[in-house]
Length: 399
Image (cartoon, rainbow, N blue to C red; front, side, top):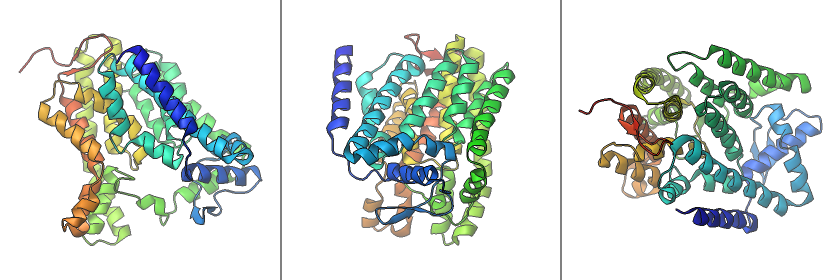
């Protein structure tokens, strides 16, 4: 796709996001409601907030809700302007991510095909975020900025960016491990990032004394409904295992316990497979930059299969890894399967119509099946895209 065409698409997308009349952005309304409770001196974790007659828990740290205060003020001034501005920002950072993926992670490639995959695969995370008002895109652009810094060799800056990005949902702090998964571990940068993450997170207690305890108590409550989201909304391996066990007849808490036990050997397989693939990358790839880019793609693919909770809008993280798998030298059948599974998302209603009964649940995890194939391809691929206008050779010999 030519640059003028790309600019035209970007301008049209931004204009549409500004003019489109959004519905109720539930996730945004929840976060704004929690921010208002906090701004009034209350404890947002003490009780649920009510949005359109439905109660929702506040599940982010206090400082994360502080960041929503300007949005709350804008929505209070004019709700339509506020919602459109929020979605305008989401589209803008999505376009920024597309640029980061091309410039710093994947390199030149089929822009139109990549755009279609980014828009419509894995349940269309941008579309989900635009309808729900979730702030995942803003978190993801920080994460991908961090990955771009890592690919460029700026380890301290990468560690700092991850420390900031992890303040909202905490899980991204795991990406600091990239600094250790190489022949010469970057312990200095790793410890700096870990210390900065703890320091920033500690500001929650300093600025809002006592609320961190309430936050962790709420987060650890075993009866919270969000813990048991599964299917297309939460295509994590842990959620899938629990869903299978519940469908087989186990009581929910028993199923959750056994799912955690079954998850451990799975996690070991993913960790070992990813580690072996990383070892091959760092041994035979041509340059440091290519090694780092390939490491990011592999670790993101593994993260999607190890995260205990992986919501539909979190699949932003897997898009570049999927694109790399599709542009690799993997067999055509595998690459076609990734596309089909990623685009299908969920056909549970069709499975129910065909008489699958409770086992129609398997038709709600196509994103997860695609993620497994992406990981499988990346851990075995001989070539991957690189920004050097040529393939990244992962093996010095063929056959």
